[in-house]
Image 1 (cartoon, rainbow over the protein chains, first blue to last red):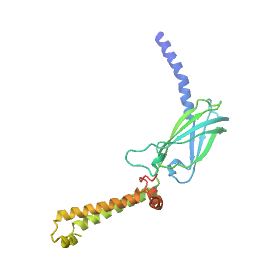
Image 2 (cartoon, one colour):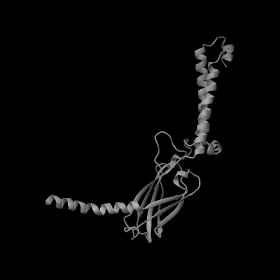
Image 3 (cartoon, rainbow over the protein chains, first blue to last red):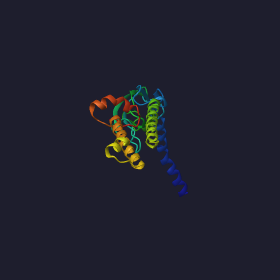
Image 4 (cartoon, rainbow over the protein chains, first blue to last red):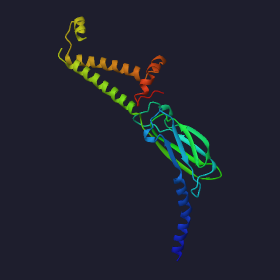
Length: 167
Length: 62
C-alpha cells in the first residue's frame, strides 16, 4: 500500500508540469514568407505568434517579452557580417491582441536564430518558449562564391602550367 | 624573367630554383591582390568592393 500511495503521489506531482509543457507547446509561430524561403538581408519577414492561455483559448490582452539572438559564430566559415554573430539583436515587449503578436523583421545573416518568448501579462503568465529559426544563405551568393573559388583554381592551374612548361 | 636574370648575371638558372622563384613571386602577388580584394579596410578600397565582399557569403566584411 505505501508503494501505491507513493506512486499515486508522484503521478499527481507530475500532472501540473505536463500541463505547463502542453501550454508552452501550444504557442505557435508563423512567418510570411515561410522561413525556408527567407534569405539574409532580403525582404522583411512578417512574424506572427499565437498565444493561448492555460485553457487553450487565445489570450485576449497581455504582453509578450521577446528576445532575438543572432546565430553563434562558426569555427570554420564566418558570415559576411561577423560583428552581429552571437549578439542580442532585439529585445522588446509587444502587446498581445486577440491572442496574436505580429511584427516584421529583416534577418541580417544566415544561421539559426534563437527567439525567446515570455508572457508578462496577467493572462497567460508563465508561458515561455524558445524558437529556433533557421535562415539559409542566398543561393546567388553561394553561386558567386563557387565562381570565385573556381576562378582562383583556374588562375593557379594556368600559372602552374606556365611555370612547369618547356623553357 | 629568368632570361633577364640570366642576361644580367651571366649564369644559367637551375630549373628547380627558377620554379621556386616564380612560385614565390606568383603566390606573393596573388596574396596581395586577394588581401586588397577581400580584407583591406582602407576606405576607398572597402567602399568600392563592399558589395563584392558581401556577395561571397563567407568573407567577413564588418
